Image (cartoon, rainbow, N blue to C red; front, side, top):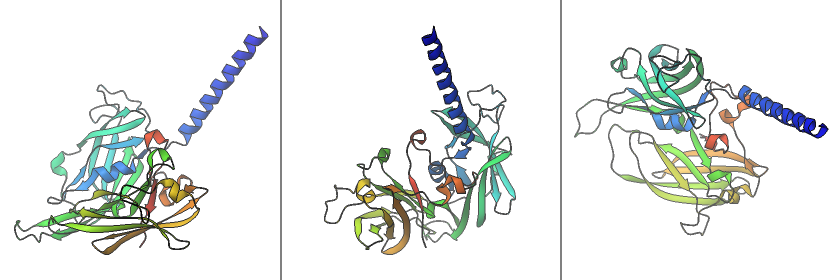
Length: 321
């Protein structure tokens, strides 16, 4: 009898610990939008200047209190209201997108939307600064700033007109990642590239990238590739080859993490400096920085990096001048 009571007490204690742990996680889980998907899904029409937003993913959204008649708990036609406000930098509202969203494997998939006033209300954006403001029941929870620039079409074989380009996080960050955060995995550096031009070029340009240790200026790895740039942002992935190594012998994360200190990724495109991306290794781990540090970042601006359900990390490196 005493043994049975002891077991019941232990089970109850363990259950209370789980509930407390889940409550603590929920308390620290602020709604946000996947940074990767924002870079993939937000763009402006090169020929028409209209803002386009593809499928996005959100984390930590609450289950709506208002039931939906469809398979989407968030539904413009009934259910929870999940909106994106397109605003100028000074707060003027231009458009409102209301999403269909459902929970998929712990994430919320924003699969489609309706535009308040219809898609015809989405007008070309003028040159300037803007922000996407995401809101639950009209209460903002996340912001994604961007800017738009315009050029005249300079292709003699195309009708005269205006061309639109979007800028922001695409040319402000690079990313470091290695599979499963296993030091034996290949080290990858990613950034986004575009040809800021009034015409579409079909020519490839050379790129050169180096991983440099600040202590002695030693190049730990490098790569040279051809890039076919377009007047839209494209993801460019680079894998480093150690000095004297063959092109199939890539640098691993362990090769970088073996020594603490400062490092820089230096990228040149078409023989011109494109950007430097400095970071620090401490305790055998790449250090988070900037808006990826939750404790010092407003949840409205925090970089949401939710790989494999939050089990793994990639590191967002601000681009230096």
